[in-house]
Image 1: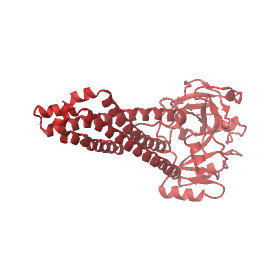
Image 2: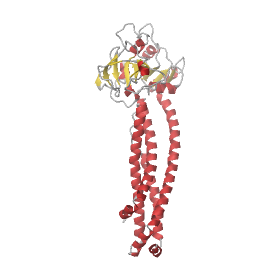
Image 3: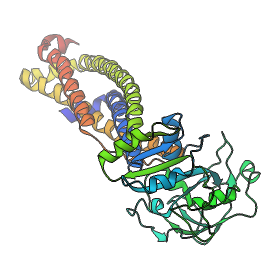
Image 4: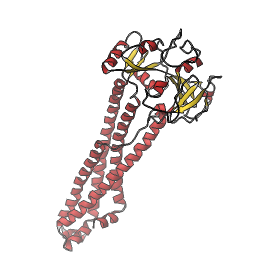
Length: 405
């Protein structure tokens, strides 16, 4: 009887499923997308324990150094590299220099130690760079090993599509300079998958600043040249938590700025959470309106099926049987709508995640959380409860009046 009812409803049943699926999909997409963004952005910052830069905006330095968003960043004195290298509280140290591009990919000057993430990451192909003029590719960089990479000076406010060369980039090329790709890193799920990592000495020399060493065939710390060029940012890996806080306090003065990336991310997450709360409220209001519309549909459908149920009663079906048939049919439609909404929400979240990854390089992985499951169960429970209203209407409807209709 339930299945016969649903087949007879046809487009009305489909409308109920679509409405419920829409409410579920919106709620699932909002929660899952926000959580995926938090998780992926935090994972991208894991190897950046402490950032040191010139006084200014912490958010700006964070976005440029970790998420490779191009911006004009002031430089700090290069001599700080050797000072920190000799500090007993520092386990590892790496400069981060950016500004050049090639085929839309950021060229990042750093050390081989940091390119391998302090020994945590091994190249999936080839090896790490060992001398000037060599480069290590991120997982998504379309260059092949052995190819020569032609660097260009980045232009503020302009970003070419990754993998393509445009006229702006070609017009700012560093003629006579190039890097040979010698290795490729595995996928990190961060914007660094679209970066080309080179020795910072090469970046300095391309810009006519020397290489920071007394000889030409040395790269990495320590820098013993008469002049050590400045860098936009330093990544410091402290030996201990106490040392990390001491370093942060010390280099928050004297012409430098030091902070934990997690500090800035918490502020950003708070703002993101505020936006999420607004979207959640809008989603709840949307769900309420949809449930109201579903209730009206259910009541209308029960009215249209009144004669059918009166015939059942006249044939000897008890009131409880009719109530159960009506309620099960309505609850089944709402349940199908909830399951469909989960699938649609997952597809929508995956599509949005693809757009975010294309724009930022952050790899967002969709995963249902307990909040989404509870939200769907709550919506199903409420929907099943309101389905009792048309079921009770059919339960109490007089048989004679239904037959006369």
